[in-house]
Length: 82
Image (cartoon, rainbow, N blue to C red; front, side, top):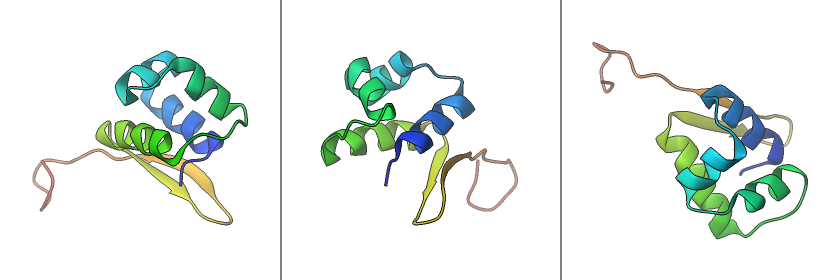
């Protein structure tokens, strides 16, 4: 699940502004900005944003107690990673 806090954390890890995330997700920058400021959005829009973040190497971490993002780097020589 995407939360406003996780979205901001993920953008911070990637050094992306609202507009860059919006472009990569194929949504308007106002949608991202409004969501990060507490406005609800459609599940389909959240899925696009999550897909863009995951494609850039960010794993979202959200449950009933925690929310955030982790940047995952592949390491050469590790099984299953390039």
